[in-house]
Length: 361
Image (cartoon, rainbow, N blue to C red):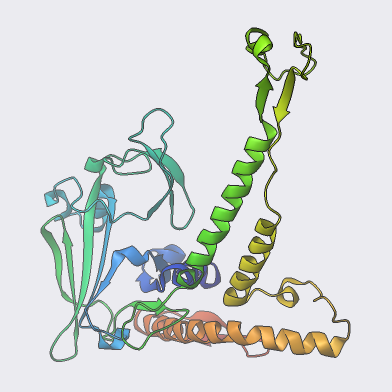
């Protein structure tokens, strides 16, 4: 019921782009009609701040989850102290919005944005709150998990300068309730590396080459008109309309002629093909993994060899995603052990895909 398979798509995509994605594994007591269930929530990587010099989550001294949320949500979570929270946001950058068009429909101050999960999009004013909300409708909500000297976990929740909660973590495993997801981990930071940084330069070359082709084609489709001196007055009437005629008063020359452009250089197409091949090599995109038969290979054995070789790069990436899944599973078991007091039926999937249903508690 926690939709882990769907929710994992967001942090994996973030890890591929920025180097890291985050999943929060908590407990929602309102699920199942008040019986409660594990809550798997993907978090925007912009919202998570870890202690410096931490190579992994075990070395973190603290982890801060900060975002701008509706003030009404704070009032529901903290009915006593919530009304003390002043309206407005402290940091406008703590929103899960991605700009994809900065030209507003009526004003240059508007921009078109979408949420990182793709759940909504809208034209907004950067000075406002986003997606139809005003700044006064949002507040900056901060959850700080802090590792104490004795190894215990402390949770402090602050909203616009008001301390809403400060005490032990609600989870008795004394661990951060988050799982980082990396595609390419590093030895010196928890951030990791994204795949985009390796192809960013190649993509820029590809974009420029396509832009050159479009510009040259545009100029070639509307070339300049050469008009003899005696036809200058009538030459001003040209409008490129189909079927239009233009009188020619010249007795010697052609009177009118198009200045034909040479068109684009065919080498640009070769450059695009080479750059695209480099990008496919870096990203592990090959014909066999896309359901296409490679050129020159027709035997089943040859296809199997190519598929195994192509999967090597993907397996290296998936290995670290599986490590993150293991942490998510352990946190999930910890939540069930702590909070699930009634009998629950859990589906277990084996390594070969077989399913088994077991009753716990």
